[in-house]
Length: 185
Image (tube, rainbow, N blue to C red; front, side, top):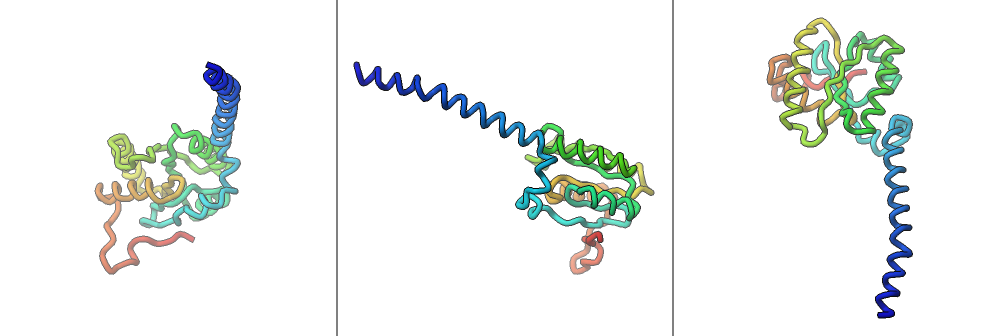
C-alpha cells in the first residue's frame, strides 16, 4: 500500500509540471509559426532547399517564394502579376503571404492568391484550384505572370503540368532542352 501511495505522489508531483511544460512548448511553436515571415530569411536549410526560378514561356515563370529584391527584379522584367500558391490554413504560409502582399502593394505588383494544399498535391481540391488558375492565366494572355509556392518545387510543378495539359504551355521535346526550362536572371 505504501508503494502505491509513493507512486501516486510521484504522478501528482510530475504530471502538472509536465502539462505546464507541454503547454509552454505548444504556445512557443504556435508563436514561432505565426511569426514565420520574420524568421524565414534566417532559416538556411529551408532557403537551401528552394528551387530555382524557371521561365515556362515568354510570359509565364514559376519558382520559389520571392523576397523583396526578387519582387523588384520581377517588376523590372515586366511581370505584372504574382500568383501565390501558399495555403492560408498553415500559419507560417499565411504570415509569408501577408508579408508578400504588403511588399507587392509597395511596388505596384498585383497579387492573385490560388491556395493549394501541400499534401496531397494531387488532391481534388488542388485540381479544382489549378483549373481556376489555368482559367485565370488564359483570361490574361498579355500579362507576364510569376507563379510560386514556398519551395518552388512541388505545387508549382503541379500547376505547370496542369497548364501543359490545358494547352496553355507547350510540352518540352526530348533532346531539346532549350524550350524548357530557362532560368530567369
